Length: 362
Image (cartoon, rainbow, N blue to C red; front, side, top):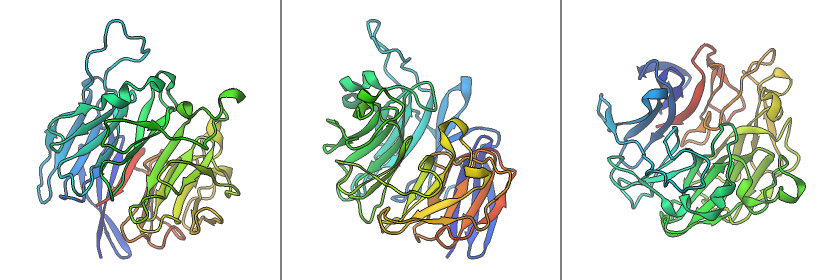
């Protein structure tokens, strides 16, 4: 069975056709433009691409199923900042950092997470967007701050496939937030996480946690995984509480995490060497996988560079296909690897691509 993988890079969108044992470049789109986020909407087959064009601003495009051309659609926009606001950040869209489809019972509904920390909702396939003011106006947002960027950002959006009103988002650095009413109200939900970069009396403050990436297994929606700045956490109750995963091979630091679409006990990580270096441990790229909810891990290196390798995998640089076996991983230095057996062996597709920001299957 063939798959299609998409790579959002600093220099455009690359489309790969994937057949058993064979991979080839199918098409190039937006050549030269930085692609910050992708969304393959499985409800109707549309593909969404977010561009980060610097002083030209953030742009958003949609390609409908079966179409050859892209249509520019609206980009999220912040309201004017009140003159008396104490918010230290500008209310101006810097980048679209996450995109998610609404539930199967919500045709046309999309979610977008942005820098500087805004969550937006569209009810018309991106023709218009509304800032989710209930989260934007949460008192705890005053404690948010930038992690990898100098402003806060929403990078993870997890919609519960059983109930579209239940949505969970991850904020760097602002913790984990949940709604059970479609965004009308929100609760801070990072209980159990720990932030070692804060003073000891503040390390458990839920509003300053830095979850690097959060993913949900659609087949077991109560199970979520988080690659955090200070370790790996999992939740078995929809994010109400998080438990730290111990005895992680190589390093518990990293950015990317992927979860099996049907088995929430199976997840993959791309470990890195501390937040100050941000390179693979011992300059040798590896992937770890757990099949039992984090009790044990397997360490895989086959096919990955093991000498003088300084590739980092960004938050959205690792993805698993619907078959639960096929994975794609892209790096900051233009490496691209594919695995057909759950990460146990990797095939090098390229080492000369532009930096890869996001990968996805469709």
